[in-house]
Length: 211
Image 1: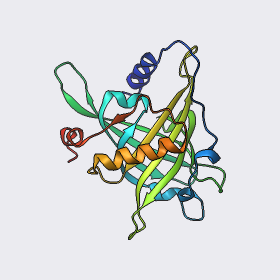
Image 2: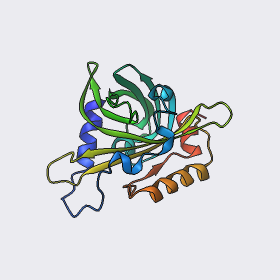
Image 3: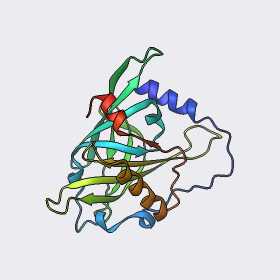
Image 4: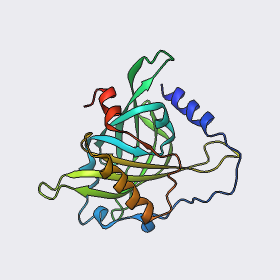
């Protein structure tokens, strides 16, 4: 499954290099006060998250994605359960891969992660994955939203650099207007690459059996 996803992603991204209008931002340019170490601990992201909007290349093959994060002292892992169509007969099934990498080594920037595919419990080809904003429930203080931006670089020679935007929520059932407004705020914050943005709507979650 991991090899299939990697190959499919690389094939989908074999584009001749052209002038690229997107650059990898410095973390300081996009980082929000919500992920300052005085108010944020990376262990807060532990648990299940639902991917509501993304440009992540591999998710174009998934109807929906459910992630389950576990955070260690130096490394982190999460399972990505992708609800995938494996044939022309629409035989939907859940395919789960493990992804992860290393936590930030700088206590002042706990949101900077380094992530890659995990094989034999070792992460490979790690790339910067920046958690630049979170939202908390005003009553419980628990996290309700996460905003990531990853700089994947050139996946193949002579191709454009690839970027990955990801917006997660703790609950699958959220209004589409909430998702779209969150994406709009992020786009206004910085020149993120969201040209291949995919939303997961209520019908998708129902088909996946989440709702």
